[in-house]
Length: 56
Image 1 (tube, rainbow, N blue to C red):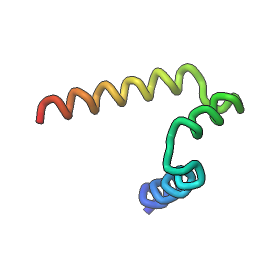
Image 2 (cartoon, rainbow, N blue to C red; image 1 turned 60 degrees about the vertical axis):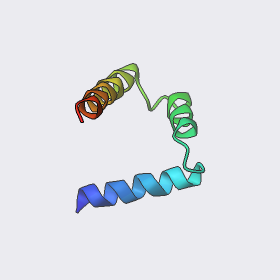
Image 3 (cartoon, helix red, strand yellow; image 1 turned 180 degrees about the vertical axis):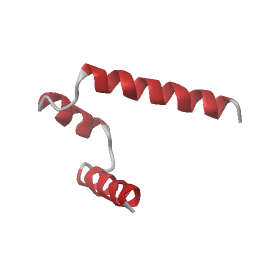
């Protein structure tokens, strides 16, 4: 499925960066591909996941 292919692609990309997300984020920011709106959306998702984890 498309979702599975996207997951594999992201995992492969992270592998190129030693499994670390920070260098990927830095590259996206420096290239202008990661916007403030993207960051806000990511924060929203992280907060939602944190609430979900707390409720377990």
